[in-house]
Image (cartoon, rainbow, N blue to C red; front, side):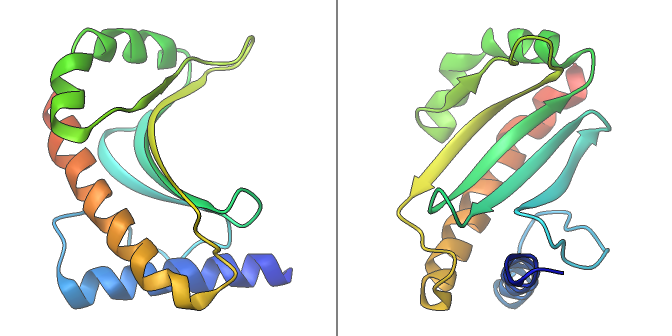
Length: 147
């Protein structure tokens, strides 16, 4: 396990503790915190997940609705029909089409300027991630259930 793996594990353990301490409507996963830069939260379909990411290299945290598999582009296209309504709830989002030959795409919001290596930045990152994840979950859950 690398130092960065340990950092991500500690970051996500801290995020889970933050959510437990302040309360959340998110269905947090029961497994141990991941050693990766992402943290998945179920949203109602196996090939659509709410994904939180923390990037040491890019110095940002991110909240996204992540689509996987053969239906990824179709799901994104169908959600695009509700883009105005979704962005009225969540603000301006990135709507990222799949790369050629890939079956993954997303709708994302990024918070730049977060030095994940500096633990002093974590509480503010946790607050942002929790707030955006709860908003994404509330907005997208009913839509995802209809896909």
